[in-house]
Image (cartoon, rainbow, N blue to C red; front, side, top):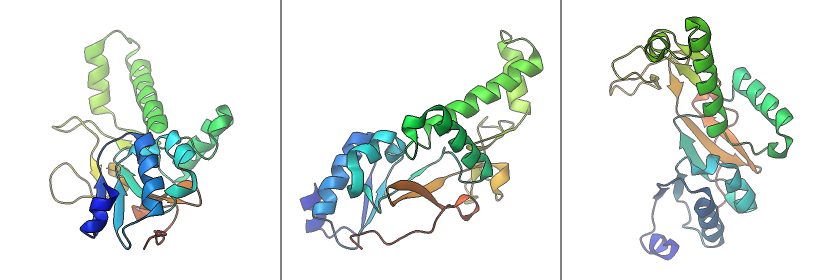
Length: 200
């Protein structure tokens, strides 16, 4: 596959699946014989801890994104700190998607159960969730819309989006820098700026 990418001198390369081990293998092979100057985009699979563990230094400079990830703001950083204090083996490599997503879902449901005082009342709990937004470590979840989903940030004019980060859930673009995932966009949650990748 890499040979084919080189033959067409691909300017943009996108890998569209979620298997972290395969992403890591691609990075190792690509970095040995890259397509110079190409923009390589990986879907959210690199968020899984095994991506950095298996790919090591070969992952440096690769970019990926997620529509659901732990922000780089104070709320997100505090969550990350508490997470690695509780699970020290994940320090520096806890993953930015499943950890925060699982936490937010449980916290949202907990708030519904506390409000309705009846965890078994499915209709009442669904109604409470629809009517009560929750700002979690992955952004604002406001289900009170026709799609019953978190609004998307940023607004691109195609429907269920918002212009302010705190009214929706931001898509995070991330780059591996110095062996760690760093949010590079949106600016409101960025931890770093985009760096030139080694093959640029």
